Length: 95
View (cartoon, helix red, strand yellow):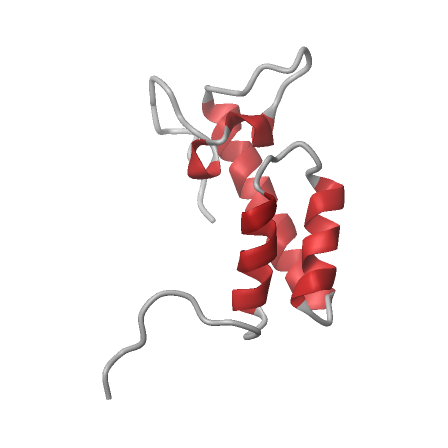
């Protein structure tokens, strides 16, 4: 992932526009460049945990432990299952 420091956004949003994923002290959601840094950190953690986990459920448990306030349990459940090949997502290409 590249750097986003040169991007000047009025209101960057963390993944899926869920500010709770990237909360600051005091509980408010990040709406500056730190939101992008937080999303990047989440995706890097996803990739790290995915690599060492035997299955989607183990990956989900690790993500929920690392990001308990994310509010996106469904994403933490579906993403690892798809990445581990336990389920498909989207449409299948016609053969």
